[in-house]
Length: 536
Image (cartoon, rainbow, N blue to C red; front, side):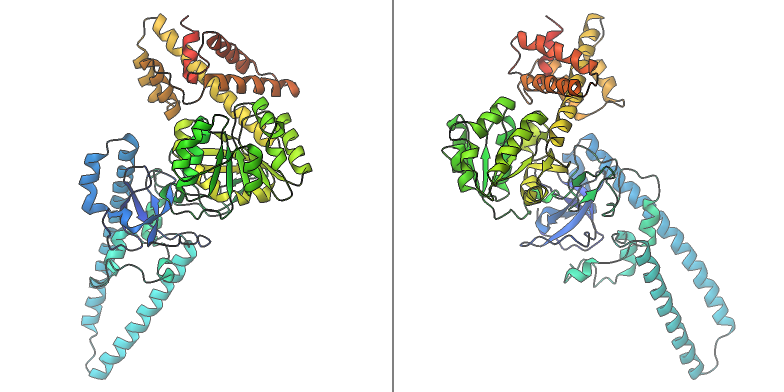
């Protein structure tokens, strides 16, 4: 996109990473958010989402000038909802301005009429009146500033209101320094946002948790939010990760395991400028990443010994233990100060055992399993659940920014494993229910496509539902999340329930269906291949 002259409050089209240009507004960044070094950029709040990011100037275009062009090339439902939100914003802002304009005009007419009746007869009286009016206007202006500043510190004036207040010579001039970025929220904008325009929400304050976030287009707030439960959401790596303007840590990063999830993670770490050394049991998988700038480690022990923080993402508890405790394993490279982050989805007992042996050697340990699939991994949109060494969690900030859209710190080691198994238990059970519904529709003479269309218009509508149903309808079971791994997670979740004498009958039923699918040789297909357990 060509460079344009923009100001705070302008409506724009912003290009964010792999996403299409999206409508947004240039707003004040949070006070504690530093501007990225390098090229000039603006902080943009996007309409129709909870997304916000520093966007480089060359990735921005004025909204009105390019509206028709953008609408022609983007036809998605969520995109149209975002455009609708902009138009609703403008309609409401215009309505407020017109009301204000009529009121001002009436006041001016009454004042002129009054002045006409009591016009001074001498030049001295005219000058006195002029000076008096000047003082009144100045005081009124100061009063407005105080009221507006008190109402909000993070807002910005609406484009229409700002246009009325600026002289033609000053419009379009970019701010000269950071001070120019701090202006109070106008009453017009505040009134608009108080209305029922739910698609566009102002960024919450640091103490206010994010609510109703779109799970498929949400990025970080570059702040930390303490939950009432005591857990912490580090909504601290925002879409600057996807936008390429995060500051990578200067620590050397190691990564062990280049499967469906690990490959996407490493790719994003490299793209964001991290120094990464990789190892994989099948060495050929390292070649692509070596070409992208990664270094090759010959053994897990070598990677750990040469890196400051080493991540690992492998398939199951046995693989996780072998990686640490086996020949030339992680433990052999651990010495005081070395950091190990296990991103595998395993049970709490396994991760606790690994933490103990790492710490016994003077190392630091963090568990950080991820929720998502191959596509989300490739897009850097994973959800990271972490527990263990809090300081290490914070040291991993730029890495988590590169690989995910949000991360949660859940306390002591084992909590993240438990939470991850519960999340996947719900997902796996839901997938089995989807397959069951589609097969029941088929055998009762109902259209499976119509069933999907109905579900997509209801409360269950989601990207997950649509993608998995499309897999089934098209007979395409290329793995995005291996069926054998979701069955493993169901099995571990059921064991977690058994350990605390908590019933998990729904998960147990779903687990049996996945076991049936595995018996039909579906282990290495996508989890949606559980459908085949119902038709054989």
